[in-house]
Image 1 (cartoon, helix red, strand yellow):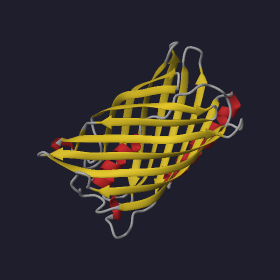
Image 2 (cartoon, one colour):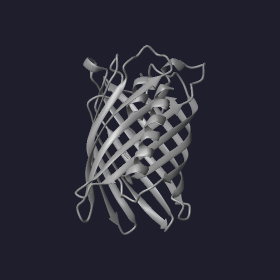
Image 3 (tube, one colour):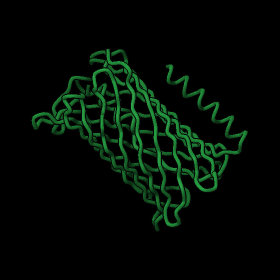
Image 4 (cartoon, helix red, strand yellow):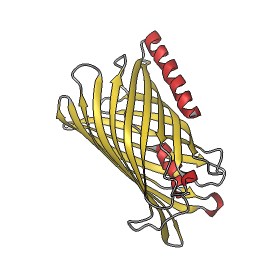
Length: 285
């Protein structure tokens, strides 16, 4: 709840700033159906959530951008809340919420756009003893128009910290994807991602994350609004003595994007850093 209040304060402050200074301001709200399987599909079960779990989830995104002439500066805020897991499971280990803030700087190089980003986030569970759970990330972002739509990619480094070193640590990552224009107001999008790194601190088990994102988005006339539906799948595991242990996660989203002022071109969606860390520290543990 404290993260939710903090995100609302940030939204209100940024909105006022955007209207006052003529910045470009967008929002994104979505509801989702979330599912987690403990082990399966070639993975051994782990010590977090014990069994199959399905929950409702919601997210709120805010982005404020400004064209400084030589580059575009942007601030992104992302918040996600999940319902509590079934009491039949070890629900203290269930992820409750994630919040992160990202600073971005981008420039048009002619045939493509490129930039840097760095961010910091925190996450909470529903009462497990793990404390001080956070993460940080830095990377490069590139996008280019093509005949069918656009292509994009990000590469960088993700690290996290928590009391028991259960989150994703020291992880290089890569995400690539594309959009495909079906019509002037409708597009498909997809991306695949990978992250490596370690888990459990000094034990330093090899960590692997593989993700898939698919979706469709449709603009609502010239209103500045668009609706979308998407599906995210994440396979996350660590390897110890040749045995892979972890979980599979899937989320079906339905959402609304809003352009609330300004026309500054902005960077697109980044990897799901909060999920990569929180699910590892909580559901997988």
